[in-house]
Structures are given as structure tokens and as C-alpha cells.
Length: 579
Image 1 (cartoon, rainbow, N blue to C red):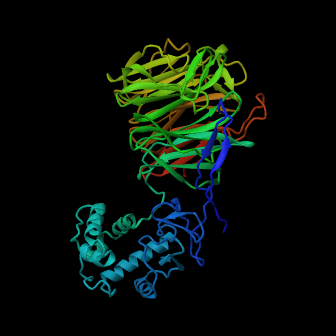
Image 2: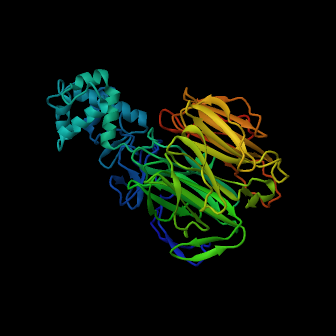
């Protein structure tokens, strides 16, 4: 089995305007060693990876990377220790013999066999067959844990009762639990024993972005789980993806964006709100090695970012440099909601050097939506086979419950807020060019979609950034709305998706921005739907037409698992698959 070693990689980041050497911290490898007993197959469970320095990390001899706890990798939900005496009890009650042992614990060939054997072991204890449980046959939960966890039976039994819920207490008889709630009992024991696995605990919307590797693009996926940590993985192709990497913590959704500068150099930026309510960020130039997390100002809510093309002179100030942009330049704009509910914005041309934060006049009650838009086609800017606008638009729900919209030519100084209808939640915005790419588009349109105070979806657009169409009313939703442009070959298609009041996902599209398809209903979701226009193949030149584009949708269903599907033609979709 190959060994992995922690290394500190010194990379010269060519994106910086000055030469700066950055130490990139080591990261958990994409493909981790599989911890198992020699005579047993590898577990199929999605166990949580860890490093040697982490509490509860269990590793093979000589390895620095492994998995949390023994339970998941051993298919042994409650960490039953290995002994022939216990094996005999298990088989006597109909369970199966373990395939081996590791770390003093039994190892089962798969999770189902391990769980069934756990049931048999508890049934044997309840039947009074285990010498270490003299009161069982008729013992209480507390008496059970006096033998099972003798160091702290009071705490264990109380916590198990809390997890299982009414009517279970520490004085409930094990015989009643075996008869009525055995599966719930095992689930609670798994929680206490540390069965660390990625299963049913995603507590955020899904963040998606794509980035370049030699010859192709990859997808990066990030979520927040119930432990408050950020988990990120790479989607390599239809049948291959990396392990989840656990790094950083957040109280809100995770934001990921890919910034490409004028020289076709990219950087991935991951942002979140930490447990201390601070903006925290890290970045990567290759999707594999990441910088350390850097904390910034205190914020509330989520972080918003967009790329735009600056056409005027913008003074950039930071602790490293002062410079001016006198020509068109790709810039990254970032906005947050401060603890005072003001909107704060800043920009960067390299993701390291940022301007100071510029505050706004006017309070916001929700997160800020941002996008770049060029009001007329002759000022649409193309960078690296992508189209960006030269105005930064922001939209949010203000303290009066109104939709408030404004824009900026430099990402810092904004127009006054234009106020509109009463809304709920965070608005959605996207720029759309009807027609065909690389051919003259009919026009540029900026779309806004909101959830009204009556929960209906309302959509409008502008072609000049100032004069808006009337609102068009559609179906109801209880969550925020998602819009994105799908590039099908040379044709642009605008997609809109929501979660209806029946918890089902609804999707529709338009070719011209005015005539919409009917809503298509699919799976259920407890989260807002996330969409990504994904281009697996990188064009060799700006004139090449790539037809392999896919539009991905991602949701968190009621089981708190991630599900995804895609279309490669804009009409027929793959089945939803748990990711």
C-alpha cells in the first residue's frame, strides 16, 4: 500500500502583481488508503478521512492518513470487541461471524452483516446470556451501560435516551427496546460510538464551480455538514470522484468561485462565515493544494462574488501595493452583509490584494445577490472563452422587505438603490444573451427573479440596466430561486429552477428571454436547487465550438444526501443519482 507524506509546497503564484512565495498547506490526498483487516474486503461505506493529528483518527501502521474511528471502516456499527466468546453469542442469536479483526474490534465483510450481528449481540445480552451483564434479562438502559460503558454509564444512558426520544429514558427496560425500538437503539449507539460516515447530514445548499486542468475541466463541490465543517470533493467524470476533504468550519452556506484573469490564469476561491462570524477564505490554483484559511471582517449571512471587466481607472489599495487600472481588466468583486446589516464590497485583481471595504447607505435584511452585466452588446467583454459584463449589479431585500437593486462601474462606488416590490428571501439575478454565441446576439438581458410576499415566483428583465419590464407571475415556492445560462453548443438557453410548495423540483427554460417552456417536475428537495453550466472539454481556440457542455442540477433531498443530474442537450435529463 503506498504511503503518503505531509509536504509543504512552495509555489510561485504567477497571478500576483509582485513576486510572492506562498506556502500551500498539505491536504488530504484524493485517494486515501483503505483501512481494513487483511482477510476482509474494503468497506463500501463513505467513511470520513482524517490526518494523524486528529482526535479519533485511526490509521494503518506507518500511514499518516486514515479514517475517523474504527466503526465505519470495520463495518462494525457499535464497535464490538473481538473475542470468540462474543462471536459465539452472536451466532447463537442468528448473527454472522466476522471476517477478521482490526484494532481489537471485529471486522465484518459488509455493513448489513455488521448491523445484523450487532442486533444479535444485543439480543444475546437481553436474553441474559452474557456473563458481564448479570442484571440483563431484565435490565434497564442505565444498568446495560454500567457494563457496556462502565466509565460513565449515567451520561451514556441519558444521552442514548435523548437521541432515541420519548418515551425512552435511562430507566427503560432493554427488553422493551429490543422488542420495539432496536433499530433506533443501534442508531443511537452508532452516534455515541463514533460511526463517522457521510450519510444524511448535509445542512446547506450545494456550492458548485468548475476549473481547468490540462486538457479538460473538473467540477468542485462543497457543502456544510451537521458537524459545522466544510466538506469539498472533486467530480472527475461520470464514475469517478475524490473523497470528501474536511477543512474549515462555517455557520452558513459555502461559496466557491473560479476567477480567471486576463492572462488565462485561474484561481479557485472558497469563502464562508466561520464559527466566530468572520469572513474566512482560502484559495487554490490547481484544485488540489489549498492555502490556509485567512480570516477577515465580521459578517452575517453568506458571501457573494462575481467576476467583471473594469473599463475605467480604479485605484486599488492594500497592505501590499497601490496601483491603477487604466485599461480593461478582469476583476473579482465580493460583497458581504456586515453585523450592522450594511452592505460592504471590495474588489481584487489577484484574490490576494484587496481594496478596503466600502460600506453602503441602506440596510439589508438578507444576503446579497451579485452578477456582472453589459447593457448593450457592443460592450460585452469576452475573457478566456467566457463572457463577462462590465457593470456589477447587486440586489437584496432591504429592511422594509423591498427588493433593492443598484450597480457599479468599478465594483466599489454604486448608484442609489432602486426599490421595487415586496419580496421574501434572497433575489436571483443572471445575465443572458439570447441567440448564438460567437455570432451577434440579439441583445443582452439582465434577469431578476424573486419570491414575492405571496410566495409566487416573479420574474422581470432589463436590456439597459435601468428600465425594467413588468413582473411576470408564476408558480409558488418556499425557497430561493436559481437561474443560470446553459451553453448548448453555440446556443444560449436560460434556465430557471425552484422548489415548489409541494417540495418538488420544477425547471423551465427560454431561448429568447420572453417565451418560457412549461415547468418540468422531478425529484423532491429540502434545499434550494444549484445549477452549473459545465464544459468538460477546453476549446483549443476561441473559434472552436464545443458541444460537450452539460447543465448540472444539485439538490439535498429529505434524507439530507446530495443528489445530482444533468442534461447534455437541454431537454432530456439523466436520472437523479446520490452523489
